[in-house]
Image 1: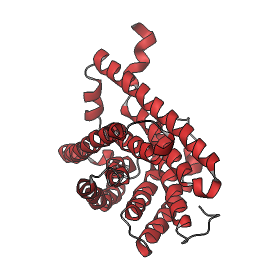
Image 2: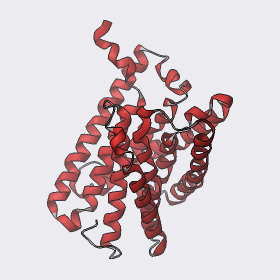
Image 3: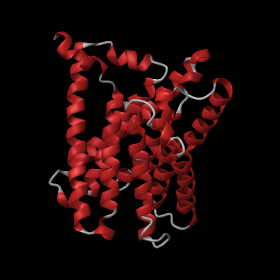
Image 4: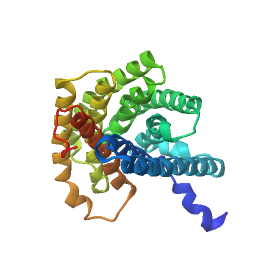
Length: 292
């Protein structure tokens, strides 16, 4: 293969983060359809097709990488920072299943396929979440450098589960896994605060990962709306997400002071999730449509 194929050795799971971003953006456009008309639905379908093709391509390349460099994924798992991104492929699977259901009137994809994709993604997400926690605990003295906002990616994957799991009929399973994500969200927050106290902020190249803080309250709010909870709680979660958006935007100038890297994609899915929650609340009459 030589030097021409050497780039493949560095194609880690972080490359699935753009798939999460495109899927989230497609869901936001799908949610905008009642406000913006059929054009929003067409944009959602185009973005969804791009996300699905990107996922399929990355899956093939990842399998090729595993065959060519069998130790590559073990290296990712053992890395003190990158191991959390192993949850990005499984979160992408859950998002693509959710998007498939949201665009079901436009698609000819059998629901059984989306069900299988969701089940596989949800099982792997739960396993990876527990694995990440076990891995963090095993790092002992070296554990604190790995505590970054990226540690929230496994949490977000779990709270995504009901968005497609409930319509697919996996209600008990979906809400149990959602509860796991909700319980871990404040725990990760405490760990990040302890890390800041002990060894200071994370490396500058991961500065954009602060936007991941926007995702949990946004997705949890969407989950509550999915479960029929209306009124104050979704609105409070939206307000908390808005606070995190404001805090994260303060870091944005510093993000552009360095060369573009894959962590910059951390902006994509959290902001798309916040936009989707805003649109849902706008349609419920709780917020002005212009805000959505």
